[in-house]
Length: 140
Image 1 (spheres, helix red, strand yellow):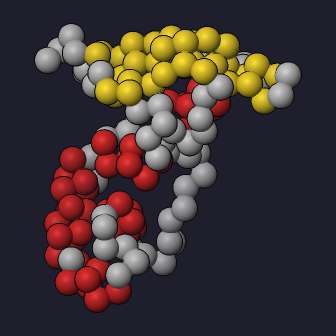
Image 2 (cartoon, rainbow, N blue to C red; image 1 turned 135 degrees about the vertical axis):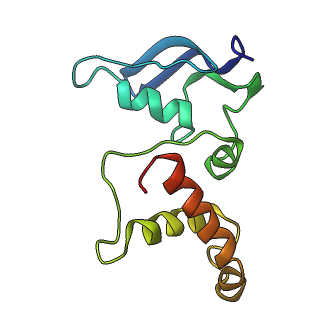
Image 3 (cartoon, rainbow, N blue to C red; image 1 turned 180 degrees about the vertical axis):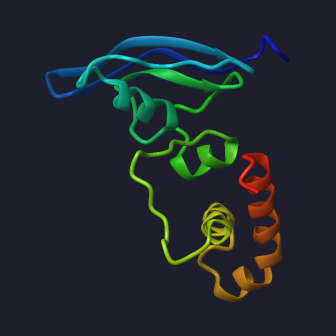
């Protein structure tokens, strides 16, 4: 649905002692829209994204994903719900190909990442997912 609110922040607040990093911010993101958060260094942009993605808990307020409260959902579960955060520091393996790096990312999101033999058997699934991503972003 084009008007569906997929992500909502309701009065998000984060305090670090006496410092208020994010002060009661509300935001609604509709499906298919693009938003930017701008401001000077120290304005709380990164803290706000950390709150939205579940990297840090809010002092108060809520985060809703498709109407469901995910404020206290563990980070590893929010990723599987479809919300995550990328960081400016990229961690790649320069000796691997682009496809191999993408496959490793797919494996890290999978349930087999620390199960050696199961991970090996799931290799074709992760290889296929890597090719989907490569195609989706137009790398090949």
